[in-house]
Length: 409
Image (cartoon, rainbow, N blue to C red; front, side, top):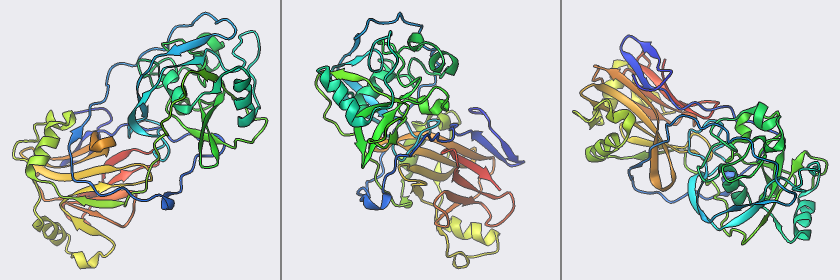
């Protein structure tokens, strides 16, 4: 048994690896929006194998309370690489606006230790427009921080998920003193009590980072992006100023992809993919490993006493399918067999065709033919060993929590 929350759906089928949990996307105010139709799809790329491991270590605790800084104190952030955004499958991730863990180079800069006025003896300055925040920083010989700088200061040198650690402690970070939640490099209250303006915009909206103290935990992720009207006044928005050379990179923008693209795969490519995916390698699925032949489609439909022609809403295939269930997300789905039985697996597609395991489903000791079918709904790919037979089919679905699940029905 691999992972948690594995579920037995029938006497002959076993879910071997539960998907990564994802929290429902929190929304606070107006959402960031991208016009999917206005963005050209990327060019078709050949299949490539670059599975990437995910840190599975124990959660790191919140950084200890720091002493309150002097008025005007700044934190120096050295130049270096930042893995911008979040990996697909991350709880709370909004795939439409968050980069897929893209590595960028961020020049050295310094950032105010606290939000403006950066003075622990004075209350935070809230309710200013974006232009007023820009002007306030300029009057100090500084500039409003870019969102890339804000994210780099938030994650710290260790690359934590939340400001100060891998877990969100609302009582400590959101309701405690401003110095109760510090990043490893000493930036305090990074979006813990109120959200903050950044210099960047998305179309006509301004990017804000962080969230109010009572907001859902997922909105406090360092990678979380939301937007606000830049001319709005009276909002509970703070800001902080930065110094040094401003970064020149533009935050990566998601593109529209076709919902389904077949991805023919050789046996050698399949074997390499399985070998480099720890969740499957532990099961020794390489033994007798093979893709299904096209005749499997006829076999599956015959078992269900039906034909391809009777289901024009579907395209049936035994190829791997590159699937975009929602704007900004792409998943690779494969059905295959090996000595331990027939199985289905799904991977989140990362930048540069990297892959991250999402879910697996094994028909243990049942080398039954499997066909995939797509087209009736963008949010799912159907699988079947007997079309329309109860308990012998199911879906690979992208659920309301933005996670991939493989189920029987």
